[in-house]
Length: 85
Image (cartoon, rainbow, N blue to C red; front, side, top):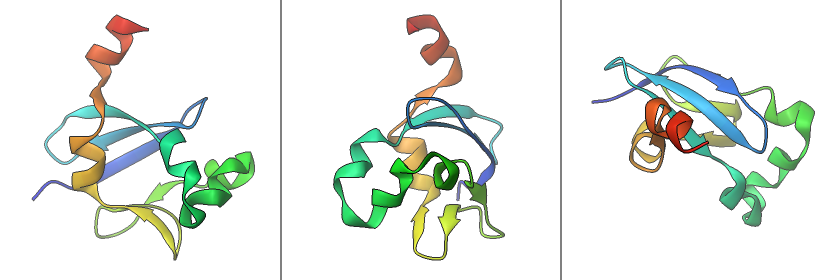
């Protein structure tokens, strides 16, 4: 079971997530902003509070989180991201 081990907020609603298998990936949170559950991510100070909890889940608070499989399956590897950017 894959788990997030570290997360770093970036510009333009991107986060860089390190995983338990050693992979590092870029996830775009922008599409989530359309959902009420994620509307607070529009606030830069809130977005920057991103962290990994003890279960390896990326969280902002008790009600705003993303499971590791969502992040891993719907993100780009850092290598691919830097190649395209």
